[in-house]
Image (cartoon, rainbow, N blue to C red; front, side):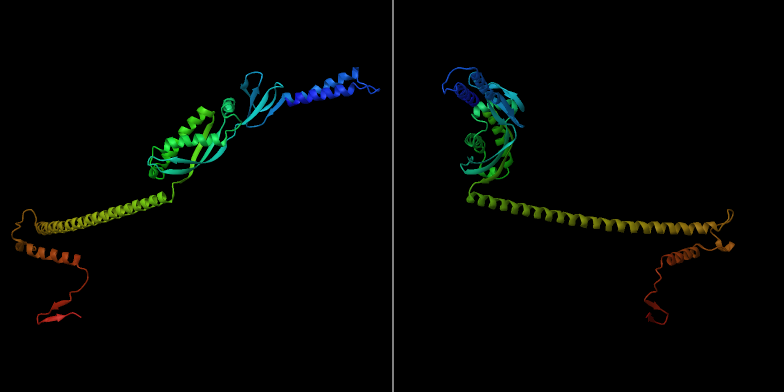
Length: 325
């Protein structure tokens, strides 16, 4: 519109100037045709450039106002009377400080960071509803407070500041995303609670509660450790008793086996002295060893096989007791 006004103004000036004759009088002449070139000034008003990461929203006062058709990035031609509103489609960040009431009627101040953007297809509707190329701080604060209040009233302050914090944040972002999309055609990328201030008294109570829980957990761990150690000691004692029992039984069985083997060996050696036709009950007739002699030899051999090489500390010589130095 400004280009049209300038063109008309320049046209009138040129028309007046070119109409002045040498006699200082104004009259129509051929030179006045040059004043038409003043309307070339309207050409820049018919060319528009949409920058990168922007969408051009068209406003035509003679065609119903805001148009549904938008302009993509690049250079475009438009009507002289059409205005182009440049809406950024990049991610935007808003830092908000919003108060919310909890289920137990405690007010807390939430420091919130929102990341959002306007999609190209939503640019026209966004401009209609926001009334500008950006959503104002008042609009965003009002909506955020409304959504936060609807979520925090479902939780008490200890849940909000404790184990339900992530659930509160997730529910808040979900509801806010849906509502912003419905009311302003804005898409939420992420939302975070940077800080929650519920007052020093509440924070002190929560700190004490956390310390008490920690002490209980430590005591429970100590109790479990003591139970494990006691159970381990019982198992170890039972195992040692079982091992001792098995060892004793094994020694007894080994002795029985050894005795059995020794007897069998004596019998075998005694019998092998005789030929098939000889009487085994009369070894002296054939000059063979008696069973007692064979037993004495085997027992003596077993003694030497198991001797550890140490001499006895006390020995006798028939006349008395001699102490071995």
